[in-house]
Amino acid sequence: DIVMTQTPLSLAVAPGQPAAISCKSSQSLLHSGKTYLYWYLQKPGQPPQLLIYEVSNRFSGVSDRFSGSGSGTDFTLKISRVEAEDVGVYYCMQSIQVPITFGQGTRLEIK
Amino acid sequence: QVQLQESGPGLVKPSETLSLTCTVSDGSVTSGSYYWSWIRQPPGKGLEWIGYMYHSGNTDYNPSLKSRVTISADASNNQFSLKMSYVTAADTAVYYCARDLLWGQGILVTVSS
Image 1 (cartoon, rainbow over the protein chains, first blue to last red):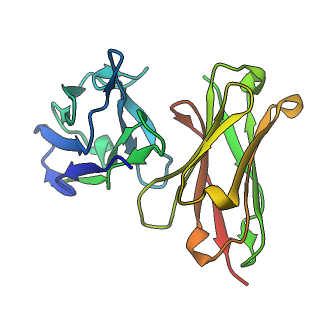
Image 2 (image 1 turned 60 degrees about the horizontal axis):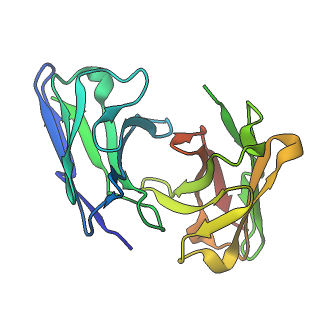
């Protein structure tokens, strides 16, 4: 199985400040020119919602404060200016290989 | 945007079979273009992929669950389903269905006598 490792596991950020979450995979997620790395946010009491697909593409309706970057096995989700509505648990996910696997999750809190 | 809704019993007895259904709002279950997944999340824990169905009937399952899981479609009712046999307390979780990358609201299933 591909192991997805997120760091940090929790972070507290003041409103208006930036935040970054790292996700490292145990194998390359690149295949035939496509990188199978996704980011989800699970707000309290809600299902995970897609933020970023294929490393850096924002899903419909996602704020441009969110950006994704990376390649191969190292990826980063950045929030340019954290807002109260960004609170929740962020997960990275790979789908290049079955079983699909997720990172442990990173809990974002507001200071 | 497509809506997915999970349904089924919220309480299942140990050793019995868990059966859940996902109803898809736009009839796309008949299309061979999508991956139809089940994912679960034990209370307070992370996400575990159970398996998916694609290309009108092909399936892949998490090896950790493969011997107990079946995913199938009921296209006439715009639904797909999950069956998990011989459940234990460790199978207590919120179960989500998904089409490609879009998830339903989830349903809590508790395994208890």
